[in-house]
Length: 98
Image (cartoon, rainbow, N blue to C red; front, side):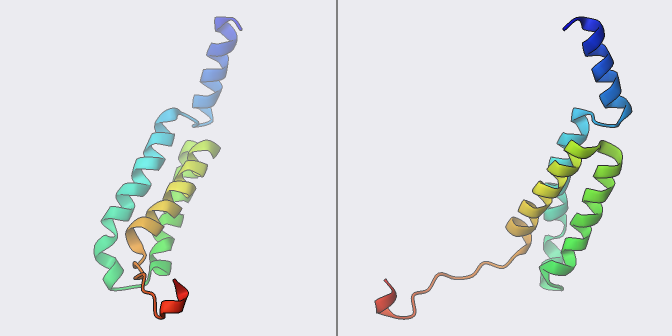
């Protein structure tokens, strides 16, 4: 490919909002949102806090395009699971379950 074709593709991606900056913003933003919501997990369930992640993914989708939206959705799911769900203990109730 020549430089004119590559330059045209880059400008089309930026015009559509699909810049790599939005992908990084989506990934780091979902992690930061999960950390910011940690104090609220004692007050409400994780399913209520999922709305914040959904709103975040929608905003990223509008501003950053499809790739950034997919990254935001995946990182939001991982952040919700990692930061906001309670840890269940691993106990063996009976000796036979070993």
